[in-house]
Image (cartoon, rainbow, N blue to C red; front, side, top):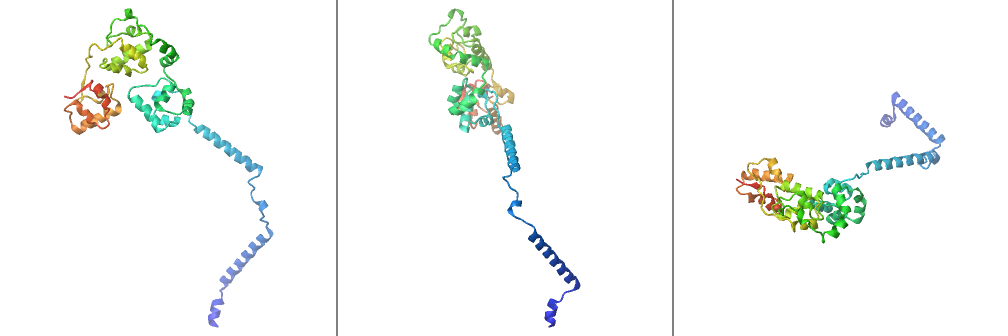
Length: 295
């Protein structure tokens, strides 16, 4: 009996605790009994106020998305960067084709030519071409393109106005004596010739930005290189970064590669060693070495 008594015997504090617990249980039972928790008291998501709030939220989301939407401003398509091309909707291959075209110092002068080079779809061209902004002289040329194509094959040369047939000495007046060559083109030819320190190869004429191939051939049928220009060369072993970068056929990245290669070999014994640079543009080698030597 003592064993059973020890299990069922409670102290005064324990009895008070049990009583308090029973009161709480009874109180909760009464609440559950008298309080009605039916489904009508739940929040109805179809109520007009909730529907109105949802519409307002949707409206705010739409406004936010419109603000984040990329806005296109007029731009020259010749200077599209990787990121700009991505924003316009071009894929990697299309962007690479344009950049490769630019590396050859070639430019597009119309929407049609842009599509030919990049191979973008008609739908994308229709979307972005209205924002193409070409220089004024290009626009003028495009407006008169049909007329130019008509008279180029039958064009006449005003021989009496030409003072020389040496392309490295020809003046603006000499070039404009050829029908189809206006002052804009003549100025670009002379400017590029100065940059090169004179034409060493007749093919360099085709590098003039915006010069139509038909017109270039017409010019070369009249003018030629009579004497190879004397070009001031820089010693690649002692030249500064800025001096090497002044080479019209060396861009910033190639210049860095050249100096990295110089750091590896200490000194170039022959200028032909630059061909050993990884990724060196072999096609431009003959033009690049016009301005460099290794001593």
